Length: 198
Image 1 (cartoon, rainbow, N blue to C red):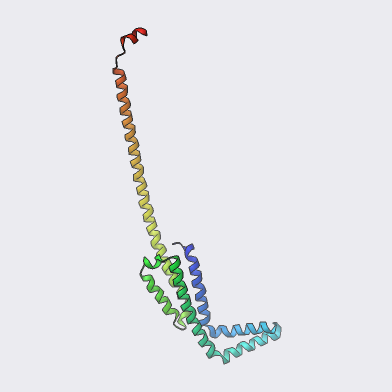
Image 2 (cartoon, rainbow, N blue to C red):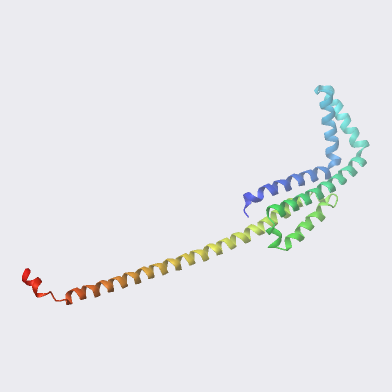
C-alpha cells in the first residue's frame, strides 16, 4: 500500500466528515442556507438580501429546535453511511489492512462510536482513524519491503559469487586439459619417415 493508492479512500472520508460536520452544526448552517436560497429566489438586489435575511433569521429563531433535531439525526445517518461506505471500500481495495493488524477493526468501531455521538461527531474521526490505519500499514509494508530487498540483494550476491566460482573452475579444468594435451603432443615421437621427408 502506498499513499497515492490510499488517497481516494481518504478523500471519501473527508467528504463524509465534512457532511457530518455540516449536519452537526445544522442549527447554524440551515438558516444560512434558507437565507441564501430565499435571496436567490427573490432575485438578488436589496429586496432579495432583505428577504433572505428575514427568512434566515425567522428559520433560526422559530425553527431552531426542529432544525437541531433534523441536523443531529442527519449527522448520525451520514456518520453511519460513511462508516459503512468506508468499510466496504477498505474491504474491496485493501482487505490486508484488517488481516495484518487486528487492532484496525477496533479503530473502525471506535470511529463509528464517536461519529454517532451528537456534537462530539464534529471531530473528523473517520478521516483520522483511516489515516492512522493506513499510516501503520504503509510503515509496516515499507519495513517488509526493505527487508525483502536486502534478502534479494544477498541472494543475488551469493548467486553471482557461485557463478564466478563455476567459471573459474571451468577455466581451470580447460587449462589443465590443454596442458595435458600439450604434453601428449610433445611426448609423441616424430616418425622417421616424416623426419626424412622433411
